[in-house]
Image (cartoon, rainbow, N blue to C red; front, side):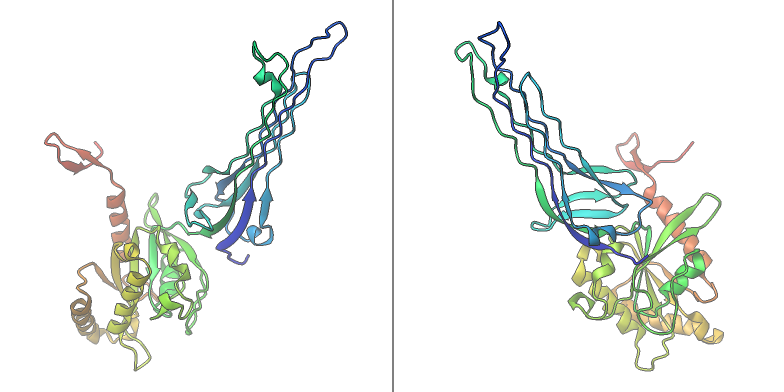
Length: 358
């Protein structure tokens, strides 16, 4: 199925039904009092996260969702029935925002999470509510309230622990194929990845993490060059970014240091918060460098790159095509993720300490 990660829809909850102004009219009861019932509540619209749904494609074809109106109240104290609610099921990771204000209305980040998107209008009051000692035959009633309505944007942001970042042909798809069961397209031309791919990386019998491969960036992506910055939102939920660099480019005009620095610049231009996520440097395609020259190539790259960017994070030289160096990388990722997930508790001195199981 085609990957659809964005859509725009209109939602309108049902209006409440009107209250009734009626009176009891029965034989032998000439002065029957008011008995008009309330109107029913309008149907609300909910969004629910469903892990069995992978795309937003259904919302590309059906774009209007209007809730049922509540029934009007009736005589003999009859209350109108409420309108049926509408449940919109969406992939886990969908963010629902008001199209006009940009306000996030729902973040469906866990399976079965249910959020009220548009509330149905309250039903109007019947005249039974307006009876008093001074007003024995009230003719007042109220109309039902209008249901909420929104134009909303839907964005599917993939949920992954680790995101792959780099130029086209840096080897991101090859890496995710090497360490997981995901099988993204791999070829020797740019932009073979046209939508995000997810792979589960199993480190042990009960240990694993999810890795996301998104389309490659080029310099100027933040201004719309190449595939643009569209898919970077998928990296916003990740906890670690792996910045893949082709350390042995075939193009004689390519400069790995310049290109790696440009990617960091695009991150900062797009989202400074994303740029400050933990980012590890992965030097790929070692297999294209003679073994006796690898140490010097790595040393020279790091010297120039660190001088240009002040980078002081982890560095992993690998050859994704044959898996060389990938095991130390995935073990280090698993350990780092476990450290991030470990809760902190206060010790007796009021200082925080990592929680350890007894």
